Amino acid sequence: MKNKFYWTVSAVVLIVLIGAGVYFVGMRKPSAVVSPPVTVATTTVYTNSQYGFSFTLPNDWQGYTIVTSAWNGTGSGACPLSGCPTITGPEILIRNPQWTSENNWQPIPIMIFTPDQWTEVFNENLIVSAAPIPPTELGNNDNYVFALPARYDYGETEGWQEVDTIMQSNPLRAF
Image 1 (cartoon, helix red, strand yellow):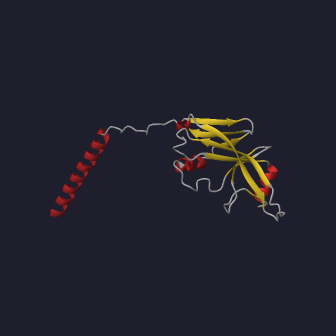
Image 2: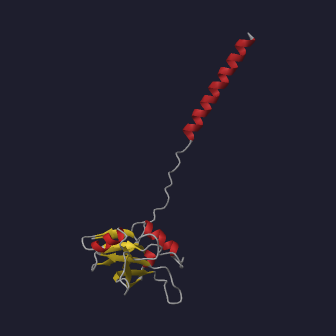
Image 3: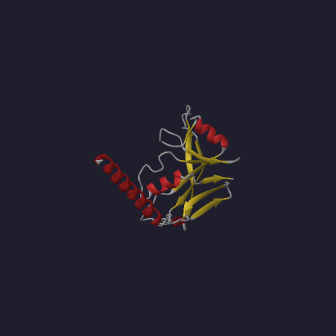
């Protein structure tokens, strides 16, 4: 008899607990799904129609300046007594708007090669840097190959981390 009493009490307690659980679950209001705010990244695009490429920059680079320069290289083979001939090509520097003559921010250098020159660089017959590695190809079109110089950020000039982040986004589009 005592055993039957415990089973009855246990069953009643279990039914009450289940009923209370169902009641409280039914009373809960569904929680609103909160989405993080959507940020629209705005960009600035530099387009160079002469060489056929565009380069996407963060919007805070609006007001950038372009400096046209040249890269120099030499052949890797034996040179005559008069010295190795110098081979040159265009290089474009995209300067951060914060750059001034007193505040030398890291620019984005883009070396421009013809496909034949690039083949020579790739085959290590044309040396365009003191670095033991060649430039990194960023893109190409029918007429040009665009490359990032090896160790362009070697001096850790102010802003080099930002340029490194920009370069990781593959910002150059050849056309």
